[in-house]
Image (cartoon, rainbow over all chains, first blue to last red):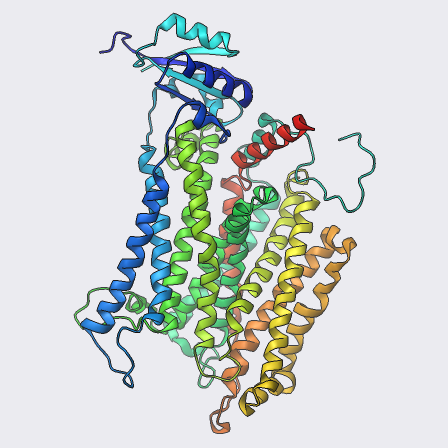
Length: 179
Length: 459
């Protein structure tokens, strides 16, 4: 059990994305690291303000597309040239131009599915329960309000002072989040 | 409303009319699903859709019971309605992907108001398209022979055949369209989960929202994944109708064996697809009072895209005729004469009037601005594009090289029942979509509002 017992952290509510951005910058400057924002649409500059690094998804998708392309071509070549070679008028068995459409389609298919699965798994979804859902006002994070959360696991976290800092930054409401 | 002086006619109308807030736009779009519920008009439309869907069920059951002979297809025209309808439906789907993927990459802000239901249209249109080749197999229970799978006969599908490419292209297209649509839906499903008043609503939307909570970290990955999906869907959509055109152009039949086919098919697909988006948008916009979100700007832009793609299609017809003459190939020349004056000549003339002639009135701003005018032109284009595919499929097959193998094809009542039945399939799914899913992306509308706020702050 952490020193903060059943307290997951605090969450502050802001009325506009601009206020949230300023607050996110300040909270990070104050040395907090276990921070996240919860917003109803992607706010430009927010990941940078919170100090998030790269996502790694583009690399995954590239790998997926290459696996799809290589697998697709291999399947066609193996099936048509090795497993069941069929000589039609002496044409080459490895007739690569005819293998391109399926190679391409499988690159897109596997790449696209990698993007989807990567997005879901890296975000650790599906996640039916999250402590933040205990805060009734948090329902507006998917509608029209902008939230900034600081977790109690952050070494700088102090129940009162963290909440005060957030209030000073223009939060209209600061709530404690039970685990 | 703004107090600005009368806008000049060249200035495009805005993409968003009322001065919405995050709260009001969320309330408006989510309210269509959660508050307005099942209205009388919706029920009537749904009943009609279900009746047509029933017709499809009867047509398919009869087909499976009696056999493919209930259709008008026979040698030499073995493709008939099934392939005409397949190409027509899959072409319609292309506009949805164009709006959601290509316009996203081009940063066209106006796409955000229409992409959701255009993508839904894509998915349902591809479903309708898929019905036809499956049934046309004659023995649909063996459809899996088209897929590479380990089998006791040690056989593979012929990977050099465009028909097998088609299986891969359409399957990939359907899968990626569905994934793209669902990824776009996740944040909106979370909004519905958080707004729903009923337990069932919260539970069902909650399951599909996967526990989305709008975390900035999640959004960061979401945005990049969405962009990559758009980047993958863009060449995909071009490839799908290209492969469909290969079904024809790789064959040696006069009228089919032509290099103009891929670009001309892709343009035609987008042409008919935008016509379908307009045909769906105008009634939806009126029925749900969405005039402030889907504005004249959207309709005008779609009209302009139709005009542009229509001209590419016109160029395709012209080049086909020119090449028939220029090639000095008697068979190609004959096909062109047969198109103009043969037993199906009327179908070619319908195509020309509907796709080349009538849509030219879209040059007039008055027509682009009028809902009725645009709706009517779009219906004409949908009819014209269907006849174009009829001309392509039937004209070339019914008279090829040897007069001894010529024949005439007429569809039967079951051909029509299957075709109109797929409208039931399409509309039933579409009505359910309109009823249970936000038909406009709420998250993207909030983003649009934010961008407008910034513009206002700058100026």
